[in-house]
Image (cartoon, rainbow, N blue to C red; front, side, top):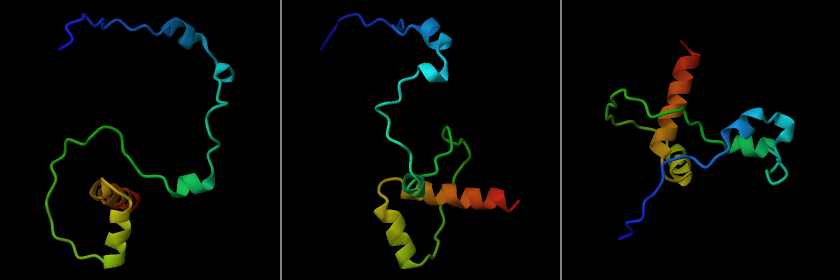
Amino acid sequence: MNNEFTSSKSQTDWQRLDAMTDEDIDLSDCPEITPEMFAKAVVRRGLPNTQTKAQVTLRIDSDVLDWFQSQGHGYHTQINALLRAYMEAHQ
């Protein structure tokens, strides 16, 4: 076990960062965002919601479920986020 003291003091120069403009930021190592990237984007909505969740049984087409599952871990959360976005758009 490592018993060395770890400082909680930030080593970031916050004053220098606050003084920077957008033009001062070097984006040369960031890829250009393409429409294809947006098409593959996942909707994530901020901090976890403290609302309670209800477990339900939902019948959906198997190809729809297969597609969501192929997106990887968190597909339940993706389905919930898309349903919430739809709900909010239609209120």
